[in-house]
Image 1 (cartoon, rainbow, N blue to C red):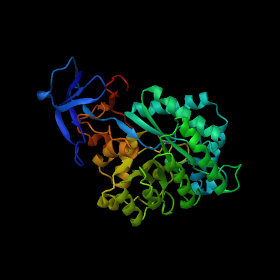
Image 2 (cartoon, rainbow, N blue to C red):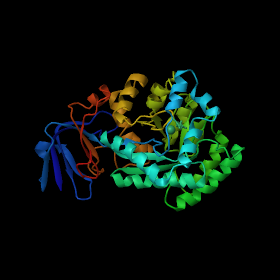
Image 3 (tube, helix red, strand yellow):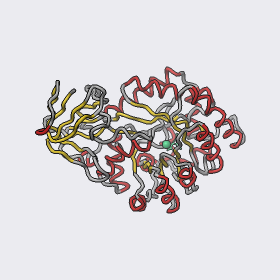
Image 4 (tube, rainbow, N blue to C red):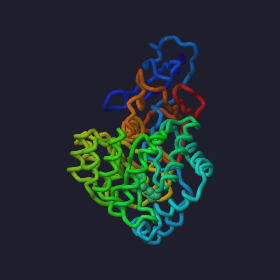
Amino acid sequence: MKLWRGGHLATLAGDSGWGLIEDGALLVDDDGLLRWVGPSAEAPAADEVVELKGALVTPGLVDCHTHLVYGGNRADEFEQRLHGASYADIARAGGGIKSTVAATRAATEEQLLASATRRVLALMAEGVTTLEVKSGYGLNAATEARMLRVARRLEGLGVDVRTSYLAAHALPPEFGDADDYIAAVCLWLPELHGEGLVDAVDAFCENIAFSTAQVGRVFDAARRLGLPVKLHAEQLSDQGGAQLAASYRALSCDHLEHLSPAGIQAMAEAGTVAVLLPGAFYALRETRLPPLEALREAGVPIALATDHNPGSSPTLSPLLMMNMACVLFRMTPEEALRGLTVNGARALGLQDRGRLVAGQRADFCVWDGGHPRELAACFGHNPLIERVRKGSQGEA
Ligand code: DI6
Ligand code: FE
C-alpha cells in the first residue's frame, strides 16, 4: 500500500461540485486501485508515503475521441481554408478524409506506430491516462486492421486504449455506391472483432458521409456482436443521427453543433453521453454552438475530447480543449474537468475511473496549482507535475 498525502484533491465525487478535499490523501493498494480517499489527518498507515506538498490532484484525463493513427498531414488544407474553401468543399473535391486515407494506406504498421507514438506521448504529457482511438483512414479490411493493431500496440506506452471501428467514415474511391460499401463495412467487422481489435463501433452520419439508414445497418452489425456504438452526429447539419444512435443505446454522440431538441430528448432517455469537441469547432471556424444549456437541462452527461485528427482538429492538448470549451461553448471549468474525466470515461462505457473515490482505479494527475479551475483558465501552458496510472508513478 502506498499513501499520497498533503494534496489539494478535486475528487469529483458525487454528481456535481469539485468534491474538494484540502490537505487530502489517497491510499493506493497493490492492484492499482484507490483503497481510501480523505483528509490527510485521518489517513490510514501505509508502507510508503509520498508527500504532495500542497499540489493539485485530479483524476487522470480520459480523451474519449481521437483519430490519432494515420499517415501524412493536411496542413495544405489549413491553407486552403484560410483562402476561403470550406471543409465540405475540400471533402467533395476528394481531399479531406480521403487524402489521409491515401497516406495511411501507403504507410507500414511500423510507420503508423512511430507517428502515433509521438502523438500519444504528447497526450500523456498533459495527463491522459485513458484514450480512445478510431480507425477510419483505411476504408479497406487490411488497412482498418492495421490501424486497429497499431492502436492496441500503443497500450505499451503506459496508457489504456479503447478502439472504435470507424470504417463508415467516408466512401473510398474503389466503391461507386455507398450502400455497397456499407455492406463491406458490415462484412469486415466480425473478422476484426474476432481478432480482438474492436471495442466499439462508430460512424460519420452527415450529408458528406453516410445516411441514418446506412449507419443503422452498421449498428445492426455491431449489435449482432454485442458491441456498443457511438456516432459522429449533427456536426455540420442535423441528420437525426442522435435519435438513431439513442435507439441503439449509444455510448455517445459526438460533435452535436446542429443537435435538435428531439435529439437531446432521445439522448437523455437513452443515457447517451454528449461529447463536445471544441478543437474542430475552432479549427473549422464554426459559428453554430452546441446546445449546451438544453443538454444541461435535459441532464445529458457532457464529455470533452481532443478529436485529434489531421484535418479538423490537429491538437494534442486536452488542457487547451478545457479552455476552449469554457471560452467558446461557455462550459464551466468544473464541467470541462468532468468532461475530460468521469464523463469521458462514461462515453467509453468505463465506470471504474474518472473520480478519486475508493474502489476506482488509481489514475490521477498531480498539477502545479491550487484550485482545479486553474486548469481551464490557462492555455498554452502545461502544469503537470506527475501522471499516475494504476498507482504507478513517474509516468508524466
Ligand atoms: N469528424 C471529424 O471531426 C473527423 N471525422 C469526422 O467524421 C475529421 C476527420 C478528418 O477530417 O480527417
Ligand atoms: Fe472525430
